[in-house]
Image 1 (cartoon, rainbow, N blue to C red):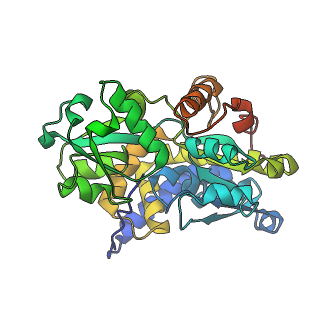
Image 2 (cartoon, one colour):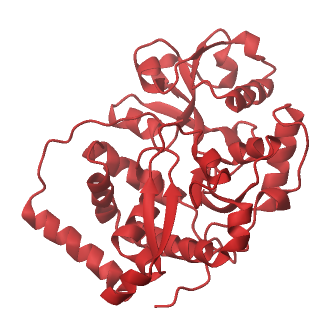
Length: 346
């Protein structure tokens, strides 16, 4: 779970830097211009984020800045939720066209009878990590016995911890956990806990490195939890059936934006700083560098945003075995790759 590292920037970028950034963005956007008349034809389309704008959303905001959604005939509005658990409920209720959520949340939503389906991966691997500092003297999971672990209080992450500890014949009763909500960094920096579970490797992990804290960061899938898609785009199934083309166009524009972001990390950082002035520039720059390789790229013959049904099947079974869900639905009920990028008419 990410922590708000917002801080007032209080600075003005030099004119020369601004011109260089604009030139870089224009170079990337050269093939994406459209006539002004087309703006009146754009379809209203809404996306609800999982959290405040941050480097996980680099492809989205780059695509918006470069006009790729406009090229696709979409007038995109981006909404920021007050509660990270709310977006999937909003999409299920038809209040937003797409939402960013988490693979475990999709499974829990299905368990609750919400008719939602994942249509693409934004981040196709776990970001959630076990993190401790080198100075803690912890050399491995076995050394967590008797230690305090800060958590964000997310129920399925308690199951992560149980699985992680079981690999070294420990149980949750062998450690002390403290629910600190979003205050994971203060807990580990201030000594309230020796380790944390729930921080993202590209957020809290990067933050600790910049502070010179020498963190040891291990994603949970390297500790026994089945791999999963950390961030996915979710649609209401009925909405998807009624207007599939809008979803296809959005995903294709996002693929273009993600590729453009990867080509120009500095310009991408500036885009994010512009849309969220509360981000701290140095930290954001480092997070962008760490995040861009993690944004679901095209892999081999698989298209951008591809979700592996076999991986989902294994994760579904794990959630069922840990009694987080009561049944084992087929991946075909929870995800579809049918709307992943084709081409956008230009």
